[in-house]
Length: 342
Ligand SMILES: Nc1nc2c(ncn2[C@@H]2O[C@H](COP(=O)(O)OP(=O)(O)OP(=O)(O)O)[C@@H](O)[C@H]2O)c(=O)[nH]1
Ligand SMILES: [Mg+2]
Ligand SMILES: [Zn+2]
Image (cartoon, rainbow, N blue to C red; front, side):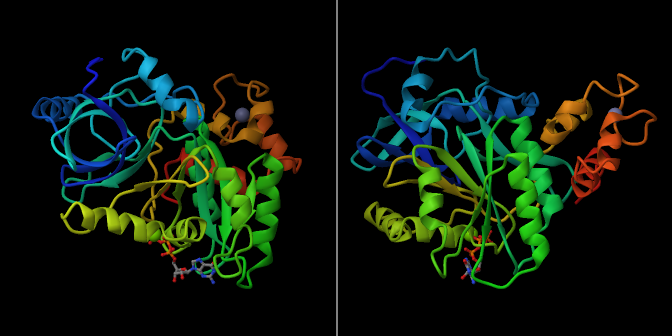
């Protein structure tokens, strides 16, 4: 790690086309990457190992300090700079800077993107150094897809990120099965927050849950993620636009995530609607334990290598038959295990 006092530490708020807005104690600095870093990233991408799960990060307030003290060998250096990454930068003038170093990542949540031409999937980090994920769905318009929620939840379990479920558009009339599903997730231990941007129900509760955390809003398109950000921090969009015009470089055209400082403390990132989160880091043997209600039964099956799909003497299947494990959750498990999309 470079210990140059002239360097500022900051967090990447947004980035596009090699230009990054970095939040520092000295204000927002618009940065590019040092040539050496660019080269290192290009090399790392061709040899990138698949990520493993990492310990849960500390709350936001203590994070900068902890990251600075950490030895780089503990966590892999990212192969690409993402929103939420901590960097060391050198100021060039009042508004611009050069990123000299990127600090090790404590955690990340990635989506998989199918590159259209060769069907190869590439990993895109939605947010680095987060500690909780708010899975936003709407009660209706669009109808909640609980199979997709289960998929998101397994990824949060595998990456040891706290997951909260937000059911937005509670002002609209919706199907009773939404209420039943919410109760089921609550019983599993996932907090469910009902919100409405129209009636403002649940906004205060959501705000208190975000305080002092680094959170990501993710979920399908059109459920109201950006509307919730605006309801939580009125004027935030306005403030960011002002920042852009102040630097004289025009408005952002970011397609990825964007991180906002919360006025009560903590950070919140909004991301574009997604259909697939990267589930490729989850080994088949690990998947069952990502369904938290399966855990008491794992190791109780007749075969020690039981996949819980169709084996004789499977304790998980027995629990489903006994009505202890929700059948729809079990079907989600099979779908993810057999790699069916949705
Ligand atoms: N009735 C109702 N409509 C809402 C609510 N929240 C958002 N909407 C509407 O839902 C639509 C989609 O909202 P967005 O905030 O753009 O949704 P998003 O999740 O950010 O969508 P993407 O950016 O595409 O991922 C907009 O027309 C909003 O006005 C709500 O609580 N109640
Ligand atoms: Mg949006
Ligand atoms: Zn089994």
